[in-house]
Image (cartoon, one colour):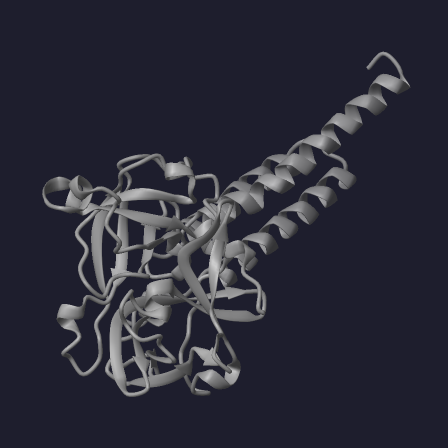
Length: 336
């Protein structure tokens, strides 16, 4: 170093580099699976021991050695905290977490059954919502207006058959309790019903999607990417309890572009009655656990409505094209 100023500048550069490394380590931890974190922790201990041996046999000052030990202990604590935050693998007899986040939905007018759809739970802050389509809540054209709906919630983490049916009101003094989800052009076919803690059994097991499931975490989403629709086909509704079915398909239009000026994109997949309102999911490329809820990214809400134009919804390959309404709009949900 030529002078004190140059030495000071160099020290500042080193501090900036250390801060950047401090930011990098949590990012690396967040991107690793539980097995990867264990390997990283063991490798770090081995490399730290090697560095310690070299430093003890060199002309390092006690200040440098003390700083090294302090930083090793700090990094090890960060790794251990990451391991504690990693979801533990579920017991093989346990219910898949996705089963706790989705539900069949049946709309009624009094005792008259109107339609069957799919729905999922979404949490915004401390508010919980049931998300589906407007047609699921309001009924299709020509039908009476629905005044209540029934959903199913799990009651036991080890027995998928132990589920409770819950009846939820849709109207209050003739006004809907649900509201349409908005995009930049106005109301969308997606709707959300706010849920109170008293609407569900106290012992109900609920997992809800939230904004962390919508975030892409820097992963690219492109045309042709494989996606899954988790819904409840009406053809399987005869069972004592509905079974969620995951159907695979692909993104058929640019995900980031607004299809026909709306917050939606096209999917290419097989659908059926009862799947309207189903969650459209993408398996993340990086996940800590294949069974963890964060292993899935919530992309959109499935719409069973055919595309406009007789040629689009009639037959052939175009019959597999459906709108998927972007889950990004759920970020703006607010309890009325």
